[in-house]
Length: 428
Image: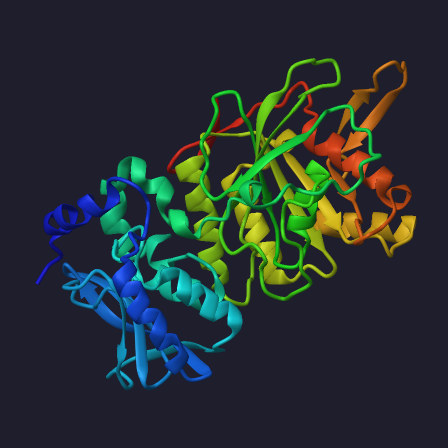
């Protein structure tokens, strides 16, 4: 039997309209939360190969061998969060073993009682992976998978919600605590100001949009903190990506030292390439889909690397450079060799040179800047080494901090923003 797209559209569309929320049922939640204490300490993330409306797909769930946890059922007769006694399923495929940690329990408590299942926006894979590792991501909804190909044409304005956490799971850190300033004594002429962190982008027509890309562990989140000079992004030494989905840090800044007014700023921190929890190609597809769905104008692409750059990491970066047409838009790219604080000057330059050679980057590409009140022109590098060790005094990092701000926030006169659509990037 062939795929019935019209039936799927009718059934799904009503779950796309309105708020992007889990619609928690408090009565169901109280019953399911009680069951968490009955789970064994070892869990498995699994899936079954199935068809939704004749479309090949996968239904994901979590099991400890005695209980099953899933969002919706494989037949779509129940679109609620399900927590019930069950042994192993026939033909199940185990994706990953993981432990029932306090973080897993906390995430379970958040989603128990959910009612608002959607194949595109709130599906079984997103729910299961969120419980397992905190990442609201579905590989079924990126790239050229049958489900994505079937659903994408009908999503329209709802496309921007794909792989974005529902309202209940979004962290609005501006409401939880004020972001602490890292270096109060740092005087920056561009007046960069942090406003809030969110998981959804509300583009302002005059906003400057920047995306930070790079391998897991390269220090992208610490670069976000240094750009705002505030502790707005979580930084943790781990082989797993701290950023589990696309985070947007909004603010304002002065686009030149001669300007007196500020413009809105969106800094997008992406999921790290080669994250141990997510397939590398899925990460590439997820980031591309987010940019295509949310960012019409892209002004700066910040590539962050550190330590030894693995072949898979370099391939992922070059994939983005090709997609964003680096060869035609070099003024829009900044390349950072991060965590260079332990290197001497010669080693720092050698590391940047090797990074540029590996990625096919123009090592000498630069801009010329005239500092306020000065007649001396200064070169702004677009490929540079930086290092910001935790709790380092300003004197140790000030030079790198100033170079970072100039490379990211100042623009060459020949810079044109990238126009992003569903198939390519082109100059406006």
